[in-house]
Amino acid sequence: MAKHILVGISGGIAAYKTLTLIRLLVKNGYEVKVIATEHALQFVTPLTIETLSNNKLYVNMFEVNQERTTTHIALSQWADICLLAPATANIIGKIANGIADDALSTTLLAMNKPVFFAPAMNENMLNHFAVEHNIQVLKEKGYIEIQPKEGFLACQQNGKGRMAEPEEIFKVLDDYCSSVYKNMNIKALVTAGGTREPIDAVRYIGNSSTGLMGICIADVLADYGVKVDLVIGPSALQTTNKNVQRTNVQTAAQMLDVCQNKVDTADIVIMSAAVADYTPVYKFDKKLKKQEQNLQIQLQPTVDILKTLASNKKENQIFVGFALETDHEIENAKQKLHAKNLDFIVLNSLNDKGAGFETATNKVYIIDRNDTIENLPLQLKQDVAHHIVKRVLNEFQAKIKPQL
Ligand code: CTP
Image (cartoon, rainbow, N blue to C red; front, side, top):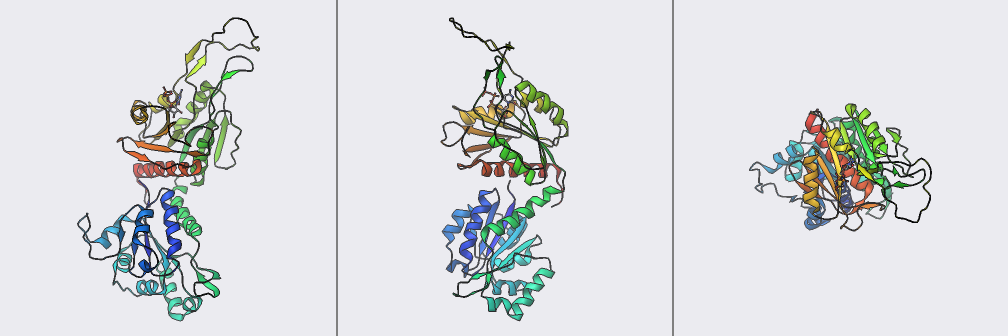
């Protein structure tokens, strides 16, 4: 369940930039609903807003909604935070003076959650005593201003009044939402990369996992203030985040050993490592010499680290596994989810182009304990990591129910 952001669009040319912002929010795992004023729809179309937000657009006050309650109340209750972008002089003036004459202004009066606003207007309007006063009123009442910037304005002049760029607004909202987790002292154990099972002094059984997916997950968790223990098989990739404590291992047995020592203090366990399922029964100390006849290497199963640790799962711990499948993907992944006692399983299908090992991208399905499947688009592993981490942190937050 993503964090809910209610976006209010009022009638200014900067509304076109709000579309990019909505896209960024959705891409990063937020659920977005939009209320637009009639004037806003002179600049951007309902179809674009609904397509990007993946939700119905609200414009009309008197539309009956499914919850059979008044729309403005339902939306204000649904939202965790609200953003007004662009915030025109008109909507700022209405809110500062308690005027509620359309869906957006009425919903804002009913909101008792944090409201961010990004003013956008001509410089003279911005400097008008009434607008200055109204902005001040909003700020004094706890609204958070995302300040307009200097630059080229729609009125063909240079000056202050350009709405902040979508990336900046996104960062303000994302930082705000993630700061909720920063003070919670959350710990995570993440595994990444492939293991190497030695055959002799120089040869091993391994796989081509680079560790990138797991490193991205560790980095995103760390950005949220989570203290991460990363246990990783041989990988050329670096980790620099100071919240990530890295332990390098070679074999499945070593990975098990390290994880067993760290699992008790972890709130979240995410195992993305491609652990070898078999290891040679004998390891030759020296390099094996070439011989004429066939060489047989006897293999024995390794311990399933995830299954072993999750079988002792504590009440508030969250366990996430990965599944790499080539056929009956969903069925196999669901089976692993339940057999290993997990909260989520992240499925990679090798039939999806751009998914799996040695790519910068991934295409995954996230399946939860109720067998609900979230089908994510092909995207960079960093973005996939964001999505997984948001789901997990939301689940964690719901389990321990702290105050927002
Ligand atoms: N896993 C593990 N220890 C192992 C094998 C797998 O911790 N010895 C974890 C992986 O890190 C992953 C999940 O279990 O999170 C599923 O791994 P996968 O290889 O897809 O499944 P297996 O259970 O090994 O089954 P199979 O290889 O038969 O598909």
